[in-house]
Image 1 (cartoon, helix red, strand yellow):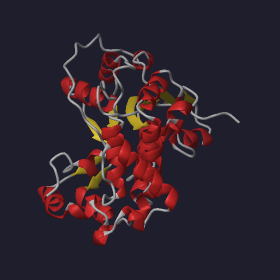
Image 2: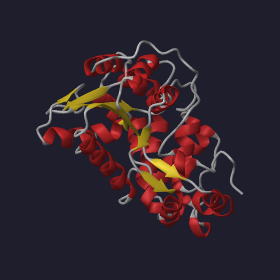
Image 3: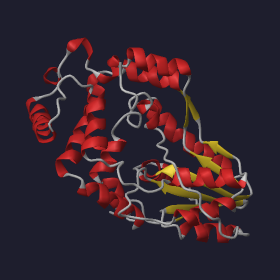
Image 4: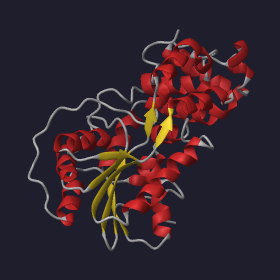
Length: 316
């Protein structure tokens, strides 16, 4: 039997939600320009794509923003109320059967197959690094699935989800709900398909994730605050180069050949559709999907569209 904390972990990788306090709304912006200006004053990095019909506002999100690097979610709430349409992240459709499957077969996700141990898969250098982290944190990872080991190193040892403030997705979703504005996910994925994919993944497919998580854990908690400061400082190359963000981007589902590509492709299709609509479309997009090499921003710029916002790549 797996722990209750783990039950929804595969689905939480797509979208992490936290409870938000109710906040007083400011006056609703009455023009496209006011919506954009108000949203930018929130302190979250964002980009605008102007079209003949309106504007698409892309909010670059990181999950688990540290309280040590505060931003102004109330301003994003106000901008949300002025938008004509809102697009949020991928929705995982989880059924009771999916939960039961994790409960009764979750051991296949948490442990290496056939009673294998880490030494069966890792070269001497990787194994030594893992054993050093075991000693440092008082843990045993020799039987653990490498994805679960990476998750433990990032979420518990680095504690990157502790002492956090609001995520942009939750701010926008709750503001839209209070204002009666419909939101839609950029796409949907079935829990059954996700579980099939995870169960079928070979242990070696998670080694890039393990490598990146070990590198992040070896450095220590200071990278958590540094990532938040880079985000609120609009230093997007620094966000993307941060070892924590690197690790999150190298773990399932982002690196999976089927799910990862599908998740990215959904955003391009949704933005194309939004560019044909009048008024303001506000979309909250994972920062890595926007700013990675050949990501959404690169593709939009490559089509000679006017993309305005912080620099997202290191200029050569």
